[in-house]
Structure formats: C-alpha cells, structure tokens
Length: 216
Image (tube, rainbow, N blue to C red; front, side, top):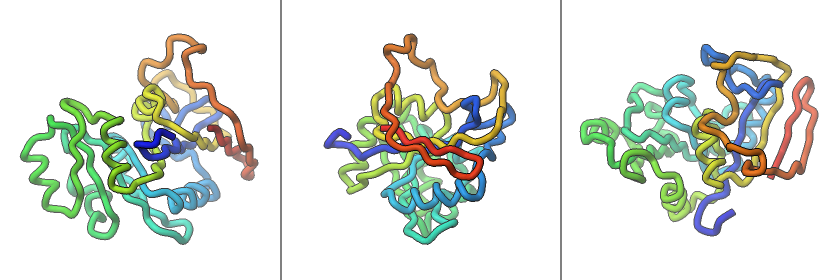
C-alpha cells in the first residue's frame, strides 16, 4: 500500500467463466452464505466504493445487514453528479455517511441538487474523476481501507493504475457466457500477459458450492 492512499480491496462474485453479470445486467450470483461473508468484510473496512453505473442499475444500499457491525462510508464515483436523489444511497445519507466524488465537469445544477442532502462532495479531476488524487483526499480524511465493489470498468481503472492491494473473489457455480456479459475487468485490458498484474494466492476457502480466492 502506498503511504499516501488507502488500502484497496477489490471484492466480487464471478461465474466460472469470469462474468460478474449477464448480458441483461443480472448480477445475482452470490448465495446467502456469500452475502453474509461480504457483509462481514464490509463491517471491517472504512469505506465502500462504487461507480455511478452500479449506483444506477443495482440501486444498492451498501450497508451492513447480514451481520452485526458498523456501516462503512459509502463513496460513489460520479463525474457529473448525476446520481438520482431517489436512489437508496442518497435517501439513506441521513443515516450513513456518504461521499459523492465528482469532476469539475459536474454542473452547478447537479451539485445544488445533491447539496440538499447530507452528502460530502469531493472534486477530483477536470472531466472525469481522477483516482489517485481522490484516494489521496480520502486518506487525508482518515479513510485507511476501501472495499472496491465496482463494475468491470471501474475495476479495470483501479487495476490498470496499480491501485488494488488485495483481491477477494467468490467463484460461483454458474456458466453465464455471452460476449456482451460483463466480466470482472472490462476496459482495454493489458496487451500482453507479461504486462498484466500478477497476484499471489494466499488463501482458498470452500464455501458450500462456491470457492473464495484471496490474492495479494
């Protein structure tokens, strides 16, 4: 972990063929047992980070529910500040600390709309949210550990910029298929295997019909 940024843990559930969602966006891969495992993990970090698309399409709470523990700070990356105010994250911001990271491209209208709720706005980047300055800002406000629960595009940005310190993946017993189905990492990908991120497997856990892989 770099001394000036939080420790980032990428967390995801994938099918046997590496998909995180079907071509229609169905991402219900995890069993109830695995959901409990993830919620225990959430309770141990300072913050959960997702992108705007996850907030829009999944409309998650990003809270701790299947176990006892504290709710981490929710962080949504939303360059233009377009997250709807009726989303669960915004509606529950009175109870759970919430940060919306935007770029300078966010309109004053969108910022004023969000300002009606108790959310903190962090501006990082000109046209898109710049990750490294954002992580530095988060570290400065005492956020030391982040659980990245992003989609494939956001996951790729973190991996490509060398900002992931751990990866915990639940391999589920499904074969999804489809060239339009979402994978764990989207984006351009590495051009050669030699350039890709090479990880060290530190733990394997069998969880009923799933396998949990823990890499650093």
